[in-house]
Image 1 (tube, helix red, strand yellow):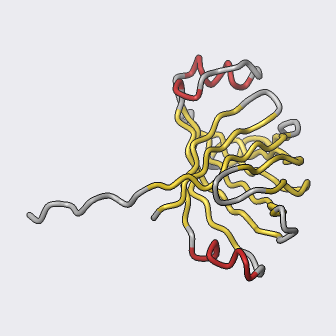
Image 2: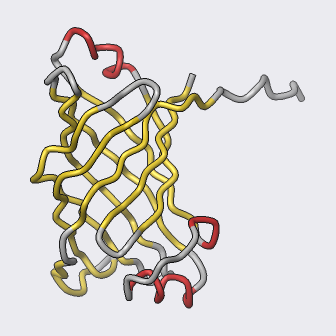
Length: 156
């Protein structure tokens, strides 16, 4: 068997803080409880990308029977130069039942106490940011009562 080559590097891209609205449940569905969270404004600050979040994004979720939360967020970043960058972020959040219950109540929980990861893709027509159209990123998330924090790393 051939040994694996070195793993791809993860390079810091940005940190996103997004304001979140109240959870809206559509009720039980075949795959679990279907729900969404409206996304408000927010900040984008990091070594490669700075800007703000455009209000109006949405985070669709499925609360599965096994306790995991499937996440499919879709929103827009307005870079400091005015360019608009679409973000699609798909991920999972899960952890011990008592930790997830604390998060659901809006309590502060350290990010190390649960798993919250997303895979991110970007789309833009802005020439200065066109390299993001070929970028894949991984984010480590943390849920707060009224915000989500994402540390975003691009795969090299």
